[in-house]
Length: 146
Image (cartoon, rainbow, N blue to C red; front, side):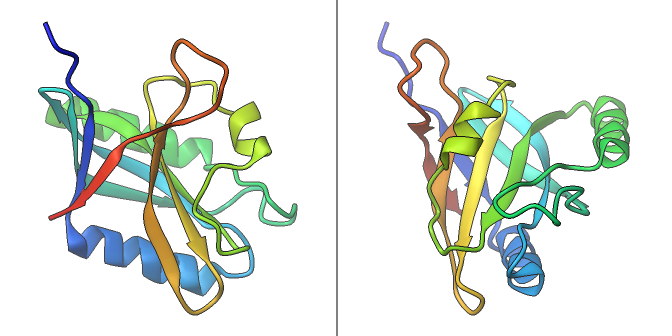
């Protein structure tokens, strides 16, 4: 049986909400959680859980508030959904994973949506899954804006 490549679907309105937060947070990293459903290997985002970046004082770092994570997990269970992943921004404008991102990729079932921001413009076409069977880095996943 052929392996189905995962796809990542996010509504334009939710992506726009994230992009607005990323621009507002610049030059620090913004972050939050993504919830929704997984159907036939595709990730369907329908919920955002914005978080304060607990590591905003450290350049190139982010940490989602554990209280936001707990609240999101409870809501997902109650709604029959799941935590799909998280987003964070890179204030250097690059929407690709950093060495720090790779070192912190310890939840292999979560999508990483990385948005590059230069303060005015956001690059959000980069979506990545942490490595599953190799240590060569992240694997790109197609991002579909619906």
